[in-house]
Image 1 (cartoon, rainbow, N blue to C red):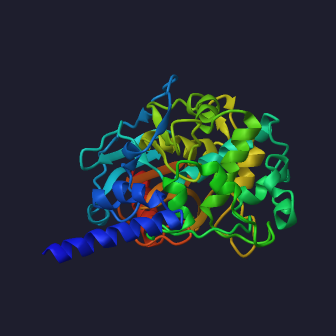
Image 2: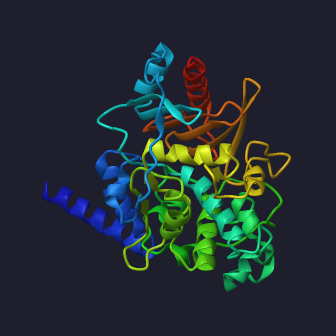
Length: 381
């Protein structure tokens, strides 16, 4: 018994030695936050375990409630997939009115949830706004204008547009279930900025699409520096309040002191408030009478950048569903904001489980949510 105990202590000490030797101390936070909470990857309520900045909703504009609100029964298929995938929120909006809204497991219309990579679409929207304000010259502006680390070699060719279109050529491993890799490190580190500035550009930028969270994180750092503002403050001023968000939101940061937002993920808000970004892009950047984004940038976002990657534009995923154009914001574990622009339909799904997602794009599940949400909206007079 004593011998076994000594072996266990020895192994623990050896593992601690390896962690600090290879500078992966962040793994301790990962163990506390993920594995000791019964998860094997980041989860939608994990914002409670991190430092956050609060985005204040000071100009609430509630959605209209349709006269047939929740009168359309969810299909057997939708009920089954929501139960199987542990859906927390399922929302359907048509012509700016909520027609269907269901919450599960204690969630409600005021419950916030981590959106993961849905945030990437928001950050690209912030890029367009920074360009409109003159803080960034355009998508062809070199990243080296903001950070000296990108003045030499392939890095000198890197532009902010390459970051927004996921074509940086960065040395980055996009892994969500293995603890020792740069994606996990970026999630748990206490200092994102130096981590990012030490990433090398190993392939020529602007040549092809490759989904990398590091691209959006570096883009967020560019926006932060160019606007001399935290991402949270910029979002609150130029989007959250002009768009009439009803609830406060949270954005995870690496640490309290001079913290940096996790730009590639981790913006937590309600289903109703996430839907506002779908409306903004359906309306070509207009919110009622106010121009939040120039339509040129909305159109640019919703067109493929590369001929061999027709399902991604600038920050948004692109689909065709039954000959209808669809654009979406997608996040880990099946966070979706789905927009049918011609039909003026928005579907939001938040939850825990989903079919395996590769390179950020939802597999069969997103098609199920498109189909079921569209059926509900089409049943409304």
